[in-house]
Length: 74
Image (tube, rainbow, N blue to C red; front, top):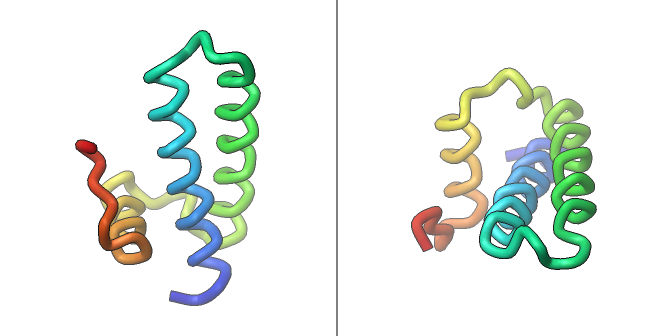
């Protein structure tokens, strides 16, 4: 995985984590801002890596490759 793809995958992972946190506590101060920033960051990084058109399954496979211990059910 090249550096640009890796950064796209890492930004997507941060978006997943921010979404989980915002879902768990939507009234937390700053939840909307954190989620919005993560979404913008992921969009830009995925676009730069040419990954925006990829399916969720393909992106999740890349996330699991970069973060082998990631468990979406946890």
